[in-house]
Amino acid sequence: MLKARISTLEAEGKNALKTVKTIADLEAWEIKYLGRKSELGNILKSLKNFSSEEKKVIGSLANGARQTLAQAFAETKARLLEQSVDWEKERIDVSAPGVAVACGHLHLITQLEHQIEDIFVSMGFTVADGPEVESEWYNFDALNVSPDHPARDMQDTFWLQRDEPQKENFLLRTHTSSVQARYMETHTPPFRIIIPGKIFRNEATDASHEHTFHQFECLMVGDDVSVANFKYIAQAFFENFFEKKVLIRLRPSFFPFTEPSFEFDISCVLCDGNGCPVCKQSGWLEIGGAGMVNQKVFEAAGYPRGKYQGFAWGFGVTRLAMMKYKISDIRLFMGGDLRFIRQF
Image (cartoon, rainbow, N blue to C red; front, side, top):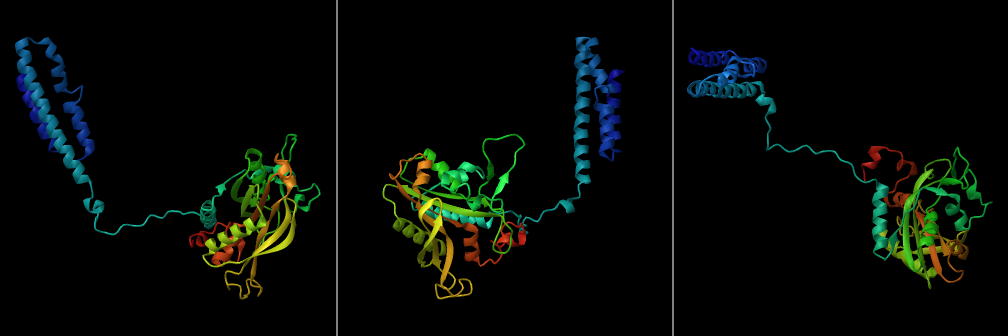
């Protein structure tokens, strides 16, 4: 009687699979014929109540029927899944050219900073860095900038306000020279460093002025460093950067942190010094300021007065980018216009 029922369940299950059209129907069939509470499952659970001889016969038939139905279930599921896929839609032409994935790249200023760093590192310089939010001491006092100096006024400096009382005033650094003061506190000459970075000035913006731009600082300190060292290194750098012959011209100037101080120009890289509208027919382009480090700056860093000599100079990376790529508006660099950025 039980053997006949097992055979009947197996036949019923096979016939029922022929009418299954969807995965949902197949899941219902699985519960009915192969589930834990299915009739075939209950027969297998009841084997413990049979004699040893009956267990062998009934158990063999029930397990055989279950395996047969399980195999039929798997074959039907595979067929239904295959039928449910739109193979034409999923077809991939492996011979078709791929679609380029849009990806970003380094900003032009970052690219130039890396190029400048490579040039100076090849001349034995080390790259230094410091905070953009700076204290008044490192930005002004340690660099011999007097309390009544115009650079401390609100027209030039972004001063930061804090709710709680503070012993020191903080600001967004107005030059990368603040890193010089920090570096000298923890290093003993001789050394030569470069300091690339972002600086901030509280001023109106136009085609040639921006409140946020990039500067590059150079500092070389030792027992016997002179203006001749600066002029040689500056000329070597600019010739490497612009990939052409460049002349250097120094003009007397004043900076609190250097003495003597001078502005330095390079021969116009656009007209090779012959005169053009960019250099105002002078043949020279103003680049930045430089000078021999003031001994008061050395004293603020903890060095004995008169023991070391050094030169410091800084120039705008943004200005160099404008010259190299003939860009007329400085505001384009920080404007976020991808049409401009993607050109470089």
